[in-house]
Amino acid sequence: MKALQQYRIPFTGLKIGKHSFDFDLDESFFKEFEYSLVQNGKLQVSLELDKQETMMLLNFQIKGEIFQSCDLCLSDYPTKVELTEHEIVKFSNDDLLEDNTEEIILLNRNEHELDVSGLIYEYIMLAVPLFKRCEEEGNTQWCDQEMIEKLKSLSVPEPENEDTADPRWEALKNIKNKN
Image (cartoon, rainbow, N blue to C red; front, top):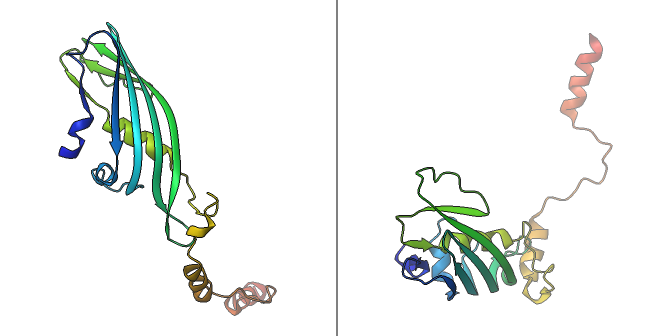
């Protein structure tokens, strides 16, 4: 988790107003998260933090590319990522800090820094497509044709005559007809 130390923002020393932070993400960032869908990427994160008396407004701009494995040919290919996300951080004196929602994070007034690594990671993971195919990205040069041919040769051929039933089912139908 030492690699994520740079994503902690000490907000207590910041004056009221807007502040900018820039982060570069690479393979080391994604390795800090166990079972990550993305293992490698080159991304730039621009964070504008607007500190106010009772809250902070966070505006994220994430641009770059992540590398994914194609579901079809298993080769790695780049996917462009361009995100704009917003988050609200409120300060509270209450011990009831479990009321965090998707858009509002509650911090105790005693806290002095904000870790944005989890937020950045979540935003990137939400940008990962459910089905990953390099041909859908228009990157047909990434598709490994040798792997596709190998998969076709190893696949089970489809039966030519679909009317032919499994003989075990036919035997069961005969038992039913005897009763």
